[in-house]
Image (cartoon, rainbow over all chains, first blue to last red; front, side, top):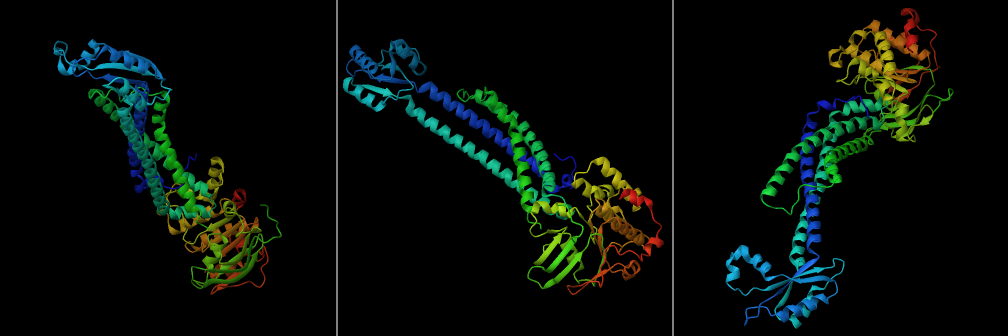
Length: 293
Length: 253
């Protein structure tokens, strides 16, 4: 890099706002990138945690207010004969009671409620089970049996999270475009302000790259300064978000424990933005100078 | 990019120049400058002197015709090679065109730094030359604090610091007193004696007559050549007696 600057770029009033703008952009970019990482991690966790299970619910007979043993047996047989099902086990009556306890309190056991019986089914994640077909088969052999596929509601959540992810990715793209646009604008203003000096450098035999280097190293420096400022502000913000997330019991959104490369990505974001600023300044100068004879 | 000495350093063939859609400010210019020649360029204001200079220092492209510098056709020279041609042409601009934020020293050092000269050598050469033009006490001054004549000398020092093969000067003695004018002319002649081709645009008829170099005269965009333009025609040089020979200048050059 060059250590001597012939152009007084440091005194340019129009370039003073650039580090602050870049700081703001990097701040937003860090939040968006962390958002993307949290969401993709969450989607992965949920997908892996729930896709291998489903629950079959057996409604109690309306006359006896209970689920008959034969219905349970029949359902288990149908399930166990279904390809892809690894295990099907009946949830005990006590466990079922404890599931409703939060709503009804411990009177549930005494009240002799007509509770449905639940069967936990563990499935091979690699085998695609046709839930609709399974539902039909069960309905034929056991009236009152229904499959509660976790995937149905999970799918919607996952899709929502994926949409959020795409929004975050668009935000990052917009940030890059705004940064590039601002640097182009700042550089063009600089070229106009220092037009006379640049013309003189050109006429005494300076190569375009000589002039471009001065603008590029300046943009790199401003970018780094702004970028680090942005990162500095983003870190406490992330901690604040994490604090509130844990207080609101959004346990499934894990703001912490990223992989090392993810921390690294966040750390180099200011550098990436600074390099984008540098390349943009360089290209802008070269394209403008190319119009000189 | 070696230059064959017999080839003219500057060659204009049928050159015309117009700005935009205006009339031609230069018409059918044809001339050659041999290596080591010394010419004055005269003509009334608006005759096209500065335009002709600009074509020679490659700040403008002609609208027609061929210009070749050091044997290379400027029009077909790749853009990335033009800076190297420009470095062989030292220019004293009429309005000096110093960089206002740089000190005298840094302004003069620019051509050397652009071509990647080491700082030690830059220091040595610039200090020596600034002493020669009498600015050794103003090395750190910014142009704004210098008088017109001092700025002009900075501009001249910048033009010659890199030992150009061609030196173009647009009214270089306009703002200096007679003694400094002769001193500067002496510097130009020393450079010329060492092989630099010199063209000086001037209004100073007295200077032209005294030095006796061939004159290129522009009138309404048409160039009139001297009757004989012989390279290095320095015989009847009144300066060689008017100003004592200064051995320092040879050390510098």
